[in-house]
Length: 416
Image 1: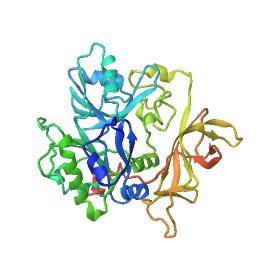
Image 2: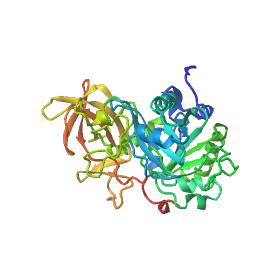
Image 3: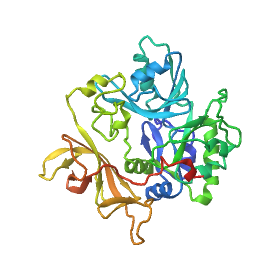
Image 4: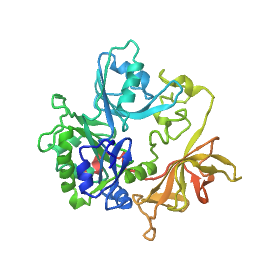
């Protein structure tokens, strides 16, 4: 192990579990366990998987003008965000480039939390402090002070019901992108969530897989016990510990971006994540002024990002060395992400997944390469392309979406 790398509180557990470890965002993190990426990926689609996400960072934004600071610096319009709900968006610079994507949690009118990517707690906190102008707000980087793990998959609530107190009450009225509880024992909100040992947690119905599940924030000294308890409670369900390999393939299939790879180095628009911008209903403008908005509407340097699906498991490396070629064999861009979603296949000229209802018995779900390309011109769904990495090439198709029948947005009643 590189001794300069940071570790999460679960690091020893990963090593004892013989995880394949690697540097991710300055942290020594598990890529996969002995189960392998394919089985970890499928566990989430068919039952449940858990992920160590303590490498991610949190920032608190508190004070009289906390809302004003965030609403100016964040791409989403927070005006309608209510206590107990969270929202996905991004922080842009003056050029309209994405510093990082994030989820903002609202505890109260003067109390918010921001969850950002590994190593970004300091940079985003400094960004907010730089642009808070005359506003009265205290912005603090909580990196290392909060641990986090995710449980994703259709059995997530059933498994968690064995490790949290009053689970029926906790899961009642908990829609997608809502949360309950708090990791701070001094916080006595109306919806306290406690583990069986009375450890307080923030339980968020969100995740990075496209599937039903939760993100759990708690004190660092409590996460090893929770991790082990969840594995024990989920044993009969076939739960798997999952590494970053499965996290990447699941998020790619769910059409979700990886910060600093799929977003970051270009204007934050003309991509599949336009919902993260505060467009008016007719998309003729924005509902608010925000940092980077002026740059977004300028016509300088526009590029386009689209999701694609391959015709088989075969994939290519991501990066500028892997070219994107149109039907005239003209290079029009490069590959941002290329992963393999093991839970999907083509059937009757459309993508189906292992969760698609009423599939014929003879269908074999073998997996498909998928991801995102950055190109110099707009393309329509159905456009065929060739991705070339040296002598290796694969044929892909531009698609509107990738893995169908995802479960993240389904009502809680489907899962308890």
